[in-house]
Length: 426
Ligand code: UGA
Image (cartoon, rainbow, N blue to C red; front, side):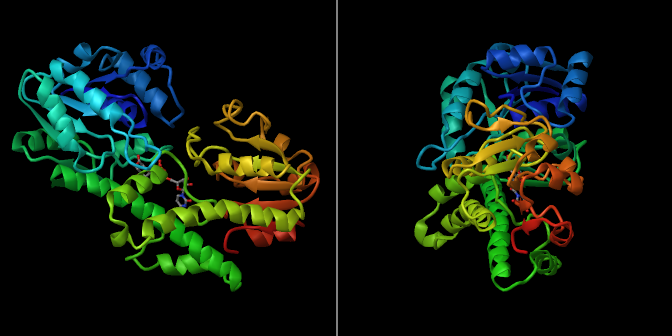
């Protein structure tokens, strides 16, 4: 099929590359000239495992194309996907500017009978506004669908090839049949529903995930108080299939461009009387984990001022170089404010935060970060941090203090090796 993807971020670029790999002809469109200039040469705008190879393969086979031109991408397309960002406004409400700009720009070039699919996360009933704006400028008949995206950064290619579910929010029978056909080579469940249901599925899923993490963090704090072991507690809780063990990892909490934003947007959609404070509590518990980390630092160091803190991991999670809403940024700001010196290492982020956090010393490897440190804080659980040479770490550090912000390491083992260890809930 001939497809167009408006927006070449994580969703648009990955989906376009996967769809091209499955034999479709896919056009990626963006208003960012630098990004498109790089993509036509096979240069990635961000790090995502497996994506560069897939894009280069698509370019080489002539099935994947990139353009700045709406007529070039949209006129031949049977299906047009809107994959632009929907950031939060200051009050938490979803900013639909980019989606509506895309809708107005694509409308005049639509081919007869084309399907416009909203993949961007938008709150119901925003699809009606999108539809209205396209209708006002379109020269032909089209249909609108809402197919939210569930891919995770760091695993986006894998998630797109092997989705758990494909949600098709559409009313038009021909459009539903075509979208089912397009997704046919992919695995997972199919769920056909109305566009508002599709949009709500996306919010409910992300809010539920955020809730699970905050719940695990709440239990971790209680476990600390009563000398329970959080891993034991959550293993017991997660063993109930009604609850499940995934997304119950306590620590420094969730970040990224999705969970925090979607929680705020959902809070904005709901009546405070209906939520009973649930959504605000999820957010407050998440923010509390940074304060808890600073409290742990104070209890290990006495005063933070003048001490050197080694931060392992800057990305909001492993497998990505994305630092949007990354716990590391907020934490580093607090350490700097308290008078600490910060040395940081992340295998993908490198020194990309230099402009934002100029005072930090960006290291080329974890060993360099440990040099002269009074405290080591693990923020992102990259694979390469799992098995460190602890005797070397101890030699490099000035004081053997560790805060394990993701419960990655064994407290018993580290205490045996002479470290003072603080995790979350143990
Ligand atoms: C999230 C959802 O998981 C995807 O399904 C969704 O498509 C995406 O948002 C989106 O809306 O586009 P993502 O933001 O890539 O994906 O990251 P997650 O894997 O969900 O992780 C979010 C944060 O939660 C990370 O900071 C991670 O470290 C943290 N986390 C995760 C925990 O603190 N504990 C856990 O048990 C799991």
